Amino acid sequence: MSHSGPTLIIQAHGANNLKDVESLGKQDPYIQLSVDLQNPKSFQTGPTHKGAGQNPVWNHTFSVPLAGEPELYIEIMDNELTVDAIIAFASIPINQAVHAPGGVMNGLFEVYLPSGKPGGEVHLTLTAVNVPGQNTQPAQTSSQPVRGVSHINEAHQKRAKSLKSKETMADVGQAAVGGLLAVGAGLLANKLMGDHKKKEKEEAARKEEELQKQNQSSGLGVGAGIAAGVAATAVAGGIAHHAYTSSSSASHESATMTSTTVQGVTTGHGVSTSYHESTSSHYDSKDKKDKKDKKDKKKKEKKDKRGSGSDSSSSSDSDSDDDHKKKGDKKKWKSHGSYSTGDKVKFDGRKYVCLQGHSSQSDWAPTVAHSLWREE
Image (cartoon, rainbow, N blue to C red; front, top):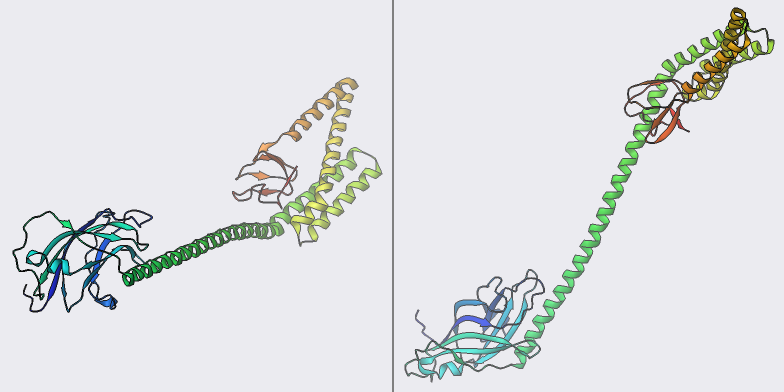
């Protein structure tokens, strides 16, 4: 490469024992330099040694035209995603290369932290070309660097501190943005969680509403049929009761049950509720009286046949015990079963009583279908 005017050629070999300014991982150093401190755009930048930490190697050559400038300003930087951080800086007098034999100086130069403290050293080979007054003696061929001269230029240190401040402000801003992002992420997570819970509640409400609609649609048909069947049973029970007993009050009570039950059928609207409230209690009362009438009948028949009241009493007690056992039995709830009013089941460790007769479905569990089951 030919140079027509005065030129300074700088071969940046590397640096040693630099301060580590990277808080996470290893720093990525590069070198930038200029002979015109007043013109920030005049700085030339070399390659970055990724992950080099405190001992980067560059082996990069710069060429800088000279117009009487006395010093070379070097800065070693850490390549960052936001604002690059300054590691060290130094001002190197150019005349020590100009006066070296052959205009060549292979030297180690101390670099400094922005605070002014020593911050390692940089290895440079400086070559002066076509510089007036340079040493024309043959250059030394030794590969060992000599100790060169470097110092802190006041204006250069001011620039280094300014670079440090920019990097610090960028870190603060990044931390603030990170904090805002974290807060935003937390708010977003809370919103998503709230939306999820809201969706679950809406889904549960939807299922309950569908169940109620199914009960209403089937209750007016199937429920009304069940109520009519109960009414017919009540009528038959009243007749049977009248046949086996001569008590006018019992007959009147049976008629009252029949009237009340039929009323539960004819009201139509809200069968699942009014049927349970008006009919269930009368049906249970009638059922008890029918059982009592049957027991009395059996007791009378046995007494007539055997002529012994003890046998009849014993049989009646046995029947009473069997009925008690059957009534007290509690089976597990099944998703595909048929249940009648008053049936008792166990589900999820709890006991429930059927409020109205129905054919069960998988999503009509006692814990969900409150219109069909009541916990004891």
